[in-house]
Amino acid sequence: MKNFKGRDIIDIKDLSKEEILYILQKARKFDPEFTKSDRSNYEIAQGKIAALLFFEPSTRTQQSFSSAAQKIGMGLIGFNDPELTSIHKGESFADTIRIMMAYADVMIIRHPEAGSAQKAADVADIPVINAGDGSNSHPSQTLLDLYTILKVFKKLDNFKIAFVGDPLHYRTFHGQFSALSKFSGNKFYGISPKGLEMPEEFRDSSYQDVVIDMKDVDKTLADLKPDIVSAGRIPKEYMTGDIGKCNYQITNKTLEGLPEHSIIMHPLPRVDEINPEVDASPKAIYFKQARNGLYVREALLALVLGRINNK
Ligand code: NCD
Image (cartoon, rainbow, N blue to C red; front, side):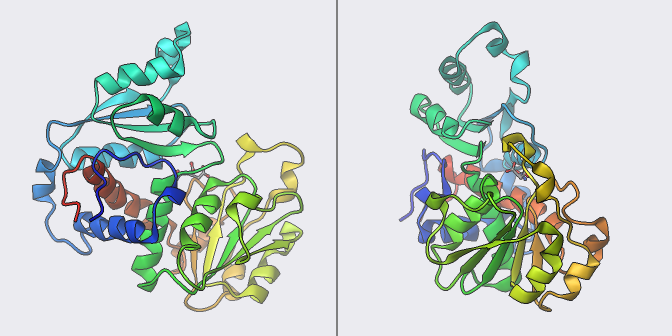
């Protein structure tokens, strides 16, 4: 029995392997690739309200949570510019949470500070879903990443996974490591310039740094032969120092050195990390990945509201 009703989803580390698989299995109910009609989904959470509190920019996470909530019948409240709320007048974070929880049944929060989602959950008596807290965690992103891998490979174990970019700050990599290291045989390689290696708390003996000059990313990937290339944006908002040394680009030439079955993932937004010429390759699954976020978030909302069976 996995009861998610009323539960906060703050950090992917808090979910067991079985719980992760359970959520991914529920997401299939909302995915037209597995379930034909979504007409009845509208009744799942009719009359319930989702509050979206976005203290940091977002396109996919915010819009897909909004779409997911409406697809299961929910209404929406919230903001994406805290300056247009009473925070501008000096209202505290805790009071803002207290007020929003009075109007909603579930709260989805993105905030630049690590630990902020937990702070919200400590105050709120409705389920809180972390939609990204600084460089810490973004559990629904991790779940949709795993859902995407599962759809492509029909498994979540025994992969060689290359993180390309900034493993020190990038929450996507932190989440993917935390979740995929729960499955056996996965090996992780953090391809980055010196100084941006994965923090201790997000690594174990299955993780290896591959410190390079980012101009050599093609050769490094060709030598490594990963099954999954997990590419990332350079998160300038969290970085200090020489940002230029992080720049890299995956092009059609990069693909030539990769194994036939390999895939390129990216949570998006991309800036220059993946040349748009790569989009036409069957290896490029980032737009499908973004779409999968919708199904995973429908499942997550329905589960924390106790509106789909929790068995
Ligand atoms: C990511 C995030 O915000 O963590 N975007 C997203 O949610 N799809 C990645 C990023 O900001 O680069």
